[in-house]
Length: 210
Image (cartoon, rainbow, N blue to C red):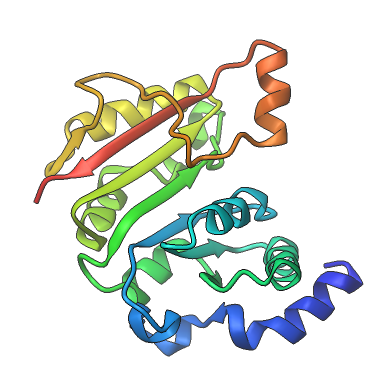
């Protein structure tokens, strides 16, 4: 962390931070209201998540990230912009989902540009696997959405393959189809640069049926 990120972390953690050790959360108590709850796994430095929280004050957002600099920067920016509908975990996403997120509580789960583990021998380390998808299914409300995005075509194809046969989900735009980027997902600087270079980005949106 930079000094500024450390200071923001120390100052802002009591408001923005959620701890794995505290166990299952009550989002209505945390945010002081009942609102659609969105979780993003692996928010990086937090720019997109902050932009989404700012643009949708009627929703509540929780970000999960394992890298302290990103958490520190997000807290610093949220403090500066006085964003109140945002909280963060500095923890492993699977642990948070298993131990802290109640069943059928999420309006949307976002997984944007996860590590592609592009070497074939490392593909099994990718987070999008059938068991993980069913964990997400348990946490989504009926009608809730799993939204994934990747700039790695082979990973997009794997995501499509896994989700098309996943029990309890339907592709929101039709079988075997990638989705246009929804307006609520901001374009990242990396993505804009990739577009200029002709690189593709694939969005996949799946709705929980039951």
